[in-house]
Image (cartoon, rainbow, N blue to C red):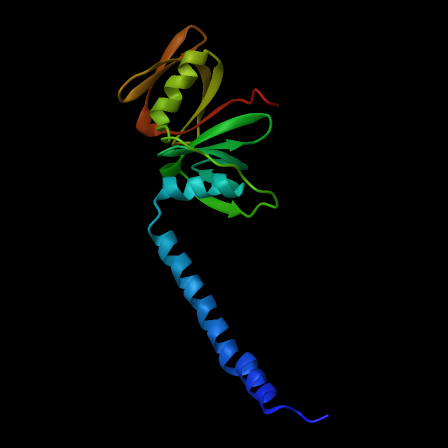
Amino acid sequence: MEERPDRDVEDHLRHGVGREWIEEAAEDEKLTELLRRRRLDLGGRALELVHRGERVRAETQGQTFSGRVTYAGSDFATLDRGEDLVEVVLEAAIWTVEPAGTGGHEQSGTPLSFRARMAELASLGEQIRVVVSDGRAIVGTLEVVATDHIEISQDGNVMVIPIHLIVAIVRPNDRS
C-alpha cells in the first residue's frame, strides 16, 4: 500500500509543530498559574486549601498542628484534627501543604476575622486552650473578647492575654 503525502504532513504536524504547540500551551498554563498564585494573600491561599481539601502542618513557636483545613477566615484557618479543631493565625505559622487524596468543599460568604471567631467561642462557654507566641498553652473558659485582648477564666483567676500574642486556639470538635 502506498503512503499518502498527506499522512507525512499529518505526522510532521503531530510530532513536530503540533508537539511544540502543546508544549507552549503547557508552559503558558504554568505561567498563568504562577501569576495567579502571586496575587493571593494568605487568606486567599487558605481558602484554596479549603476548596481542595488539603491537609497542612502549621508550625508556630513551640507548637505544630496538623489537619485538614476546613475554614479560611480573613486572618486565620481552622484545622480539623479529628478530636479537636484548631484556629491558627495565618501570619503566626509556617504552613506545609500536604496534597490530599480527597476533594474539599466550597466556602461562601465573607470570611470571619480571628477576633470574630473568638467572640463566637466566648458565646459557647466551652473550655479552650489558647496557645501564645512563646509556646505556652493556657486552658480555661473564654469570657471576654475586647478590642486588643481576651480574658480567660482559669481556676477562679482571670488571665488577660493581648490578642497579638495568640497564635492558635484549640477547641473541642463537636463532630468527633
